[in-house]
Every structure is written in structure tokens, then in C-alpha cells.
Amino acid sequence: MSTLKALIDAALLRRQPLLKDASTNAYRLFNGAGDGLDGLIIERFDEVMIVQLHEQRLNYSDEDLRAAIESLHQRLGTRAVYKKFFLRDRGDVPPEIAALHHAPAPWIGQPVSPEISILENGLRFIISPYHGFSVGLFLEHRENRRRIRELSPNRWVLNTFCYTGSFSVAAVAGGAASVTSVDLSKTYLAWCRQNFTTNHLETEGHWFFCSDVLEFFQRARRQNRRYDLIILDPPSFGRLRRPARVFVLAEQLDDLVRQAVERLDPGGIVLLAVNHRQISRTRLEEALAATGRPCSILERPVLPLDFAGDPDYAKSVIARFD
Ligand SMILES: C[S@@+](CC[C@H](N)C(=O)[O-])C[C@H]1O[C@@H](n2cnc3c(N)ncnc32)[C@H](O)[C@@H]1O
Image (cartoon, rainbow, N blue to C red; front, side, top):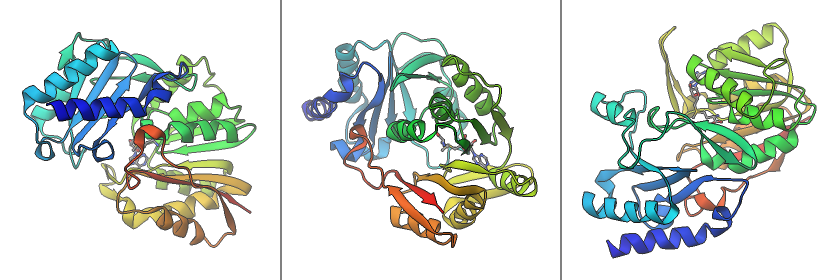
């Protein structure tokens, strides 16, 4: 227990710059092996903490874990702590785990409303603490969102696999001419629109497509739609219902990147990001080069300080195409 508390204290100390930043109140407080304990992730979303557990990997009893998290909860003055269980395939969640991930009653503290809004670099995002395993914002992209905001003025932006539209919001806030957001899920597209309005951004003049990204690219090709900033941050694995098929990123990466780059105007920029341990940044750059179109790498972003210590976790690259 004392080791666990010492590890959490050391992790907090490393994050002081973030904890003191008044423009951001959502960050990762404990990053598994990166902070010395594989199987434990703690994230803070303003008044809520989300604790992700991989119990098979943790050598602590329930009581010790709870005591350590309860002390952190007191120290930070959060209102609720929700517990989530790591699952390999989030498309195939056992009913008892799904029920837990949707329960309004927290593990520790008082229940909070189903939607809260957090602040990241001055932008607001809606978080749903008991919507499921994922609560609406992938924190590792904080600096990528800032870069997209900086790169967006006057650009026609395409945000594929947009999820709750955090990159779309960053692009519109940065002055994009128009932003197109594409996702398979109507729920996430509605959430994306809600993130626009939460930031007092107009949805008019922007596009929201409920579609498979590869089908979207085929239609965009027929209609000769073009963009000058494309965000490609696909999941590692996905299941499509109609037509029934699976999306396996490791197999489809080259095709996806090629189809995206075909839609890019000269001078256009791509942010390519993956969260897949077996896909390296070199592999991402190979996929960009395999399009055959001359390109220069503008940036190889490093993960923010709250994700340090685990470089295989997520990688991204920003490239410009002639
Ligand atoms: C890992 S999230 C992407 C994260 C997102 N780029 C962000 O900024 O936070 C995966 C998203 O891709 C969507 N998705 C999965 N397969 C898809 C497909 N074939 N076409 C379109 N969207 C898909 C899911 O609905 C989900 O919203």
C-alpha cells in the first residue's frame, strides 16, 4: 500500500506543470508502467476521476487500491471516481462489465450528472463518465489538438474516425474554412455537434457524415471533394454491420493513407496517428511514402508529459504533400 501511495505521489509531482495550468483540467494522473505500475491508469476530468484497472496485472488487493485512490480523491478534491476494466475487444463487452461501465453510482464519492464539460487549452469538451469504457476524449491527443488548431486557419479540413469531434472543434476554433467530420456512429456525431455548441461554434458551414471512412473516400473521389488538412486517427480494430466486415488497421493502413492522400490538395497536410503497439512511427512514415506522392515530414510529435514513459503507446506524424 505504501509503495502504491509513493508511486502515485511521484506521478503527481511529475505532473505539477499540468496541475497548475488554469486552461486545462483534464489529464492523465497515472500512466501504468510509465509511472511504475503496469495495469493502473488514472485520468482526471475536472471533478471526475476515471480509474482503469487491469486486475490480472495488478499485485494489490481491492482494499489497498481503494484506499490509495480514496486518498488521491481527497487530496484533489474530486467529486466522483468511476472504475473501468481494461478489455481487449471493446466491441464485445460481457454484459456484467457493460452494466458497470454504464452505472451512474461511482466507485468512490458522489454521483455526477451524465455529462460534464472539461477544459483543455481553453476549449470545452463534453465528457460522459458512465457512457461506457471511453468517456469522450482521448487525452493523449491534447498537443495534437493544439497543433491542428494552429494549422487550421482558412483550410478545408477532413476529420476521419472523428469520434466526439475534438479535432473538429480544434480546427473550427482555429479558423478552418470548413470542417467535415466522418464517423460510423450517429451517437458520436451528435456528441461532436454538441462539442461545437458547447464552444459557441456554429455547425452551419460544416459537414457531419455518418459513414464508413473507406466508403466516404469512394464517394468523395466520385464527387471530386478535396481538402487541405486531413486527420487520420483510426481505431486498431472495428466491426462494420452493413455490409458485415471487420476493419483491421494493421492490414488496411496503406490503403487508408493512400485514399486520404488522394483527396489532398497540393500543399495539404495530414496528421496520421495510431494507438497500436505493433505499428511504429516508422511504419506510419512508410505508409505516407508508399502513396508515391512527394511528401515532407513536418513534425514527429512526442506524447505530452502525462503520457511519458510509454513511447509505444501512441504515435503520430504530421506531413505535407506537394
Ligand atoms: C479510437 S476512436 C477515434 C478517436 C478520434 N480520432 C479522436 O479524435 O478522439 C474510433 C472512432 O472510429 C469510429 N469508427 C470505427 N470504424 C470506423 C469506420 N470504418 N468508419 C468510420 N468510423 C469508424 C468509431 O465509431 C469511433 O468513434
